[in-house]
Amino acid sequence: MRNFNLESYLDKIYSTFPETNHQPMIGLTADYSDIDTTIRSVYYRQVVAAGGTPILIPPITDKNTIINTLEHLDGLILTGGGDHNPLWYGEEPSPQLHHINQERDLAELLITRLAYNRQIPILGICRGIQTIAIALGGKVVQDINNTIKHDQNANRSEATHSVAIEKNSTLYNIYHSDILYVNSFHHQAVEKTGSKLKVAAKSSDHIIEAVESNEFKPILGVQWHPEWLGEDGLPIFKWLIEQANHFIKAKDLHNRILTLDSHCDTPMFFPQGVQFGHRDPRILYDLHKMTEGRTDAVTMVAYLPQPKLGETFSSKIDLAGIAKHNPALVTRYPGLQLPNPSLSPTEYADLIFDKIEEIANKKSDYISIARTPQDLYADKRNNRKSIMLGIENGLALNHDLANVKHFAQRGIVYITLCHNGDNDICDSARGCNTHNGVSQFGAQVIQEMNRQGIMIDLSHAGEKSFYDALEISRTPIVCSHSNCKMLCDVPRNLTDEQLRALASKGGVAQITLYHGFLKKEGEASILDAIQHLEHAISIMGIDHVGLGTDFDGDGGVKGIADASELINFTLQLLQRRYSERDIEKIWGGNWLRIMTKVQSLKQ
Image (tube, rainbow, N blue to C red; front, side):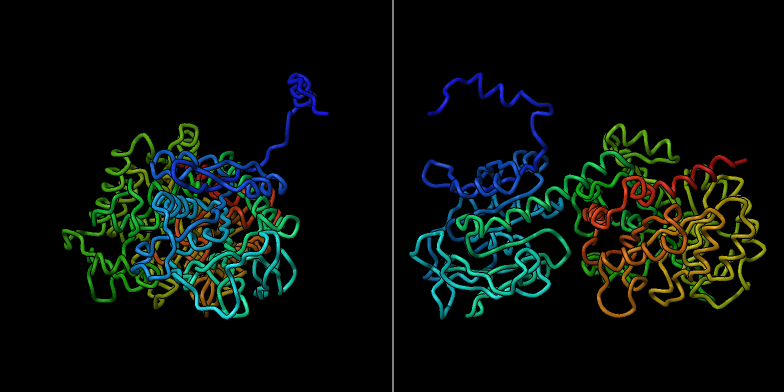
């Protein structure tokens, strides 16, 4: 007989402390019919059985409601229901289209895209798989031409046909089988996955029955209804809860530690009018993407392309390399010409820093320019993002030693001595051995950088220049965005001997995300970046590595394509069981140790 004494139930809750274990918060999109918002109870019962806490999400398009909801979610389930309006994927309705639900479409497409941008684990069921596909650039067939029956009138808990599961897919890892018996109640299906998804399962008549992320993200969509399949459907919900728990750990870790990316080239686009306070698709770093990726700080550089022999510096930036990863920039900014192409290298660098300061001043509640590690930690305590300033190519000094002090007073933290070509300071990895290493002027520059408390960056430097600088500098050297030559044999990468020498002098090598420095053939991914990181650790030790993405300077690979995806780097490290202390070192602790030392020796 049921006990109707409320106090006895409360006593059971309060009999232990803590009262309950933390469970991931899983949002479930709800249906809308007439005046009611509804959801089948089997959805939230499966979430509870899998170890999650279900939260129902009404179909609302209000921006603040969606964003505040996502802020509290650790996972998202897109539930089943009626058809989507085909206008969302550029088609007119076919005669076979059933009832669409105008209350749900936009609300669910918005929440899916925003959850995707925030790296929130997503599970789509029936209509939900179609929602994922439409939101991420795929298409839905309005009425499938099939040879087996997909719209059943059987009990919903009854399996009615089989699906073939792709090997090495998420579904295969969940069920450890290449055949699964499912229950389907649909006449629509995913027709095209788009570039962000891939097929995970098909029925015998080749209808796409499951999709998953093509970018190493926790996104899974199934056309059947695992919520009705009891124990047989539960593993899919347990997968989502597991991914949500990983996400919680990564978020909590980012809340506790400082995360710093040592190199990006985004400022070259600031004179073109990009808006750092918008989620601007033309650039890989902005305030929204930093927030979504839960990144605290980034060093933004004034990048100066090295003139060819006999040419003079021009502020026109060559987009040939950048076009490989961000063709939209080439379309929007053909030639990327600054207003005044006759600027000197020093004037150009100052213009870039002026633009960064303008951005920081406009959004001073949310971002500031940091000059020391103490500034970075103060910004984190005050919930602000930080930009540090750097120079990529000592050409900016314009052969004037006094400009080292000038830029130090502007607050730069490092100078990359050269770029792709020899300059008056040193020879480049892609140069022609003009000085046989560091020039006489270059030695003076290094010594003056030591005096001014500026870090010396040897990314792009030739091997002889690298070893010369190690000997000349009285402070540790950094490589702000460099990879391992043992894994990708290009001149720009560091040999194992260089890595050892760098570590022996107390320096750091920051793994970068340019595909050509990660992998000579094929498409590079976040897994290749982790492989380079772990090789560097095996040679140098955990105290001498970090991350410098080179975003907007050709950097960005599948799985970590822009700043919104940087938390995926942490997820990969957690998956490999790196400790919190080691992740903190990789995410900037090692870099800041050197910055502190360099700045403390300033004369």
